[in-house]
Length: 296
Image (cartoon, rainbow, N blue to C red; front, side, top):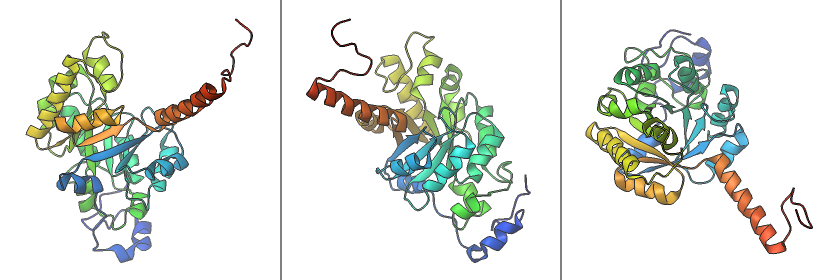
C-alpha cells in the first residue's frame, strides 16, 4: 500500500515516475463507455469467464464496446485476470472487472491491473454503495490506496485526478434488500450505474418460486427491471442489464438500459460447438458418443 499521489499522479512509486516522465501533464486515456453514453449511444458489453488471454483477445475482436473479466464466478483469479486485461490493450474495447465481493483488496487490485470500471455484486444498501464507491476513488474522494502497478503503464497518462473521474462504479442489484433500498442506492454520490444480474435477482426476490436465468418475461420481474431503470434515470446514473440474447438486449434499451451484456464466452462457445456437432450428426446420421448402436 503506497501513499496517495498528487493530481499529476506523481508520488508513491518512484519507478513509475522514471518509467513515464514524458507523460507528466498529459491526461489519462478517456473511458470509452463514458464517451458513448455522453453521445447518447448504448454500450454492448461482452463477458469473459474463461481464464485465458487468448479467449479475451478473441472476444475483443468481435465488435463489443467493453468486456468484463468475471473474477467472481469465472474460472479465473487475479493471476489470470491481469493478462486478460493486458490482452485488450491496443483495442478499442474497454476493460471492466466483476470482483468477487465488496472487498477493498479485490477491487483495488483489479483497478491497479488496469480495469476501467468495477461491477460489484450484492450491493444491498446505501452504506454498501458508499463503501464500494470509496474503494474506487483516491483521497480526498475515497480511500483507494495508490499503487497502479500495471495501470500506470497500461493506461497512458495515468494520474489520480483522471482515474477518479474516468473509473466506473457499477453496483449490482440482485436481492430483495437491494430492490427495497433501490432509491437510496441509486442516489449514492459517485455511483455511476446499477448492474442487474437477473439470475440472482430472480433467486433473491421470488422465494425460490422461479429458477434462475436470463431474459425474464414474468410480469413481477419485468416490473422490477423497469423500476431499476427508472430509479437510475431519476438519479442521473445508468442502468445496465445482463441478457441472454440480442433480442432481449434490444428490448432492454427501450426500457432505459444504457449498457447490455449478451451471454458470455463459455455459453457462446458451448452454443456454437453444440450447433456444429449437432448439425454434423443430423446430416450424417452418426450417433453421439456414448450411444449404443443396435438397441438399448
